[in-house]
Image (cartoon, rainbow, N blue to C red; front, side):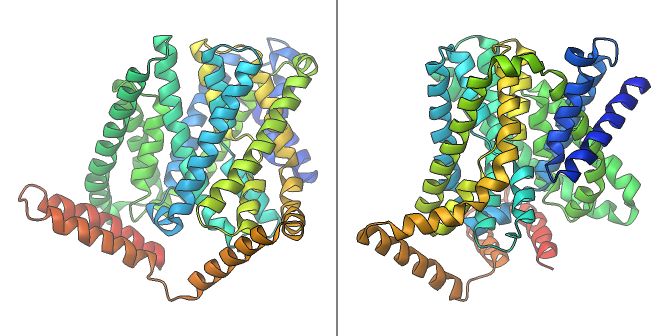
Length: 452
């Protein structure tokens, strides 16, 4: 096992340095490292695939736990309808488009559904890194884009649960799917509400005794506990890790936990992406290159189209909407996780995995260059637009600028206003009075610290 870990880490380290020098995302380097040490190039004896698979599964849990830690209700309140309309347009549009591509390629329903789920998620890591390297971190569209990515992550976890249930039942039943969604939503609500009521209170009372060591151990213990709870409830372990991250995101120690987890997440995430690369057969890339190119084009065109339309319908300016859409043109990490899930369940065609991974590598490589074309494309569209469309674009720009100039209520005050309204409705019942007060107290204390 130590030998396997040494081979993985030294190869990933050297290749990631090369990709850093080439100014490419290190995620691509990890995948290439996996190809180099995988059984298709290095043979069966260099590393034990079972050990790598086990570490990769742990890596998935840590990645999803950290994504949950980055989730903030406040961000969604600030983005308003832009995030919800934007993510709804993107996910529904890409699901339909991906399913259509699957059927066009003569895949069955199960394979087409998994393919659709793989194509509808962008990469939070790649998008934010590309935005930062482009010097756009302070741009107006970034807040809406970040909220959309957060909601996409939540939807991806839900899709994983639904696909897992559909795959194990070997059939698609609308009634069963609606029942599963209902059970999932109810379970998530109970977990989240109980977690917000109990865990922040425990951490607040134990705060004087929580140094970095005890805090990270406690956080990981809670994460693993929720993973086991999710598995016992019949859901995926990934869902449990994500939910506990969301719960801990509402505590006073959320940023501290996130900081402490970053190194651990990076190590196991690297192992996960190496394990993804180990499953790629280089000869299959040559064999399936038309399919790889088709998937990449579908993702790029689809994300630009649905991302731009969704943000425009959500109230953003056309320029900001296009910047968002042009940023989402890659296949994200969740696609690998969904593909791995399909492989583990034995329900997807083995050819889909290398196609998705290769298309992800291609779209990730192209992301920074496509992003840079968003402004020239906007200028071209504006200059060649009809008088009526140009008037709508100008009107939207004026509306957004006017809204920015108005003295807006702070996000904390908005959250408190919502809390007050709900509290007034519920506080007259003896059973819920103290529970509701505690729930909003735990959330508001975290928001107050975030504002500072």
